[in-house]
Image (tube, rainbow, N blue to C red; front, top):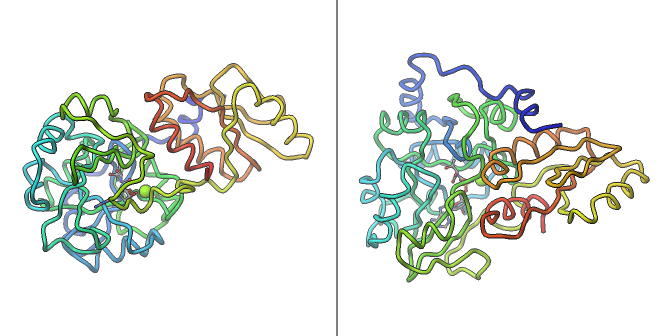
Length: 333
Ligand code: TXA
Ligand code: MG
């Protein structure tokens, strides 16, 4: 099966938002409501970042521990001064180059920012997303919208409004429609707190691109961090069926062994390998296209009909950093 067929099956490009939906979403946000909305990375579960009662509802709808900080979404980069202080020049350079876009900057917070947003830390995560619906919502609202990914805690992030409905049912007061997310995995998170920039979570924006813009060495993930990033622990983004990373050479053997035990294994393949016993999805050979499909494919393969998901290990190169990061977390390793 090819991924394009899966996307068609899922019918992810839902109807456009009816006229007046953005205005309704703004009224809800202003009155402490929780609104799920599309971004170019994944769907977010948003609330007014200055309203503690609304923020508490995000944590309760997601089932997320209260010490996990939330990214504040803004309409324009000039607003970062409202939320952060001691902003280094590298932050402005990165904002100028990559916003709106899939980049979250970790900066020193202003004193008044709610501990529910910061997870009780001295820092704040800020991002201007590139999705037209998100930008329309943020401009009309005017303030910061705190939003984690719109999935239940520890589950795969939603990349369509339908996924949000599957994850959260009628938990949010409203779900804005925005089709399938064009990036498909969460933003690159960069800390600009001490010294050189540090990547806390890899994403669509590469370490090399960050180095070119800042003119500084950028630390890759995997190095012990002084900044705590709850939610980046192993075994985040986990499907219910066990997901295993397997080298191409071992795929036939492991698939055969599972089949002999009567286990139904689905395969996410990169090489020409096709399972003779279970479903095989031919994943795109290029990292951005792979990332675009990743969560939708995991979600489809994890809908109950498989006992395991075998993923052919992608190349271990920097271009595949974000995809490999998400696959490792999904496999709990
Ligand atoms: O692409 C994205 O970033 C999506 C969309 C909705 O914008 N959001 C997202 O949010 O992935 P969430 O909450 O699922 O993941 C945000 C990550 C968490 O691991 C959180 O711990 C980290 O960002 N984070 C947020 N603020 C932080 C801060 N002040 N310091 C360190 N880590 C922070
Ligand atoms: Mg998340």
